[in-house]
Image 1: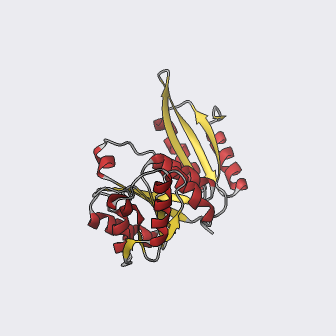
Image 2: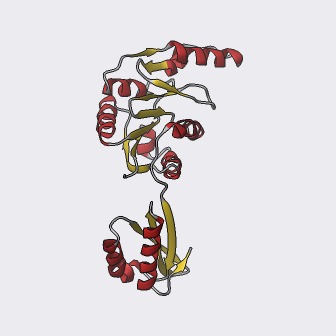
Image 3: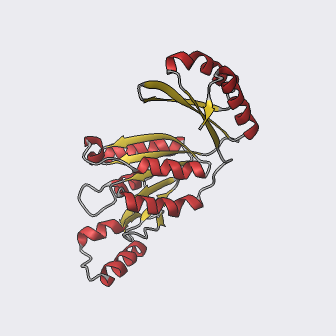
Length: 244
């Protein structure tokens, strides 16, 4: 059986403008890979309600799991929760369970829980809360969509909360070899290896070091015997290859 597939939807004008550099995609990819879930697609959309709704609907229908980052804070442009609720025609309002978390947190810290902060308690009626041990304001899961904060520390904490609840597949094994030859020289024989092993992922990642062109060849498979066979085929094609 193929591993479950996931998508990530990165939301925010600040990401698309380059003012903020995304680091959440890599963290999610690592966490999913360790749990045998394949991150198959990443999309970025602006803070536009219709764009978020359309992307959520498209990704939710195509993948087993969807993860969003960004747009669940207290300001006017934090519209992700409302857009995800609209994508599934689920009513949304300040929910008692989310409000109780915020009230306890802000009261303990002597901070007023004003209208802006209560925006972070707006949760779709059918959603399940996602714990936020960093700043308390929860994310949520609605159907197969996991809505999480964009702040990297909070996103990472939410990922750690969510991943144990997901059903993964078979662990993906990987092995890498290095060939100190440019990709143009190795493309044809490497292509033959890939065709001979259609059930194995064979990737080529070029580098330049001290003026020398080369490539790291990474083989991935859930079947250790097929992984070994593909590596042997690569080493036969490139006798100078060495393990990384």
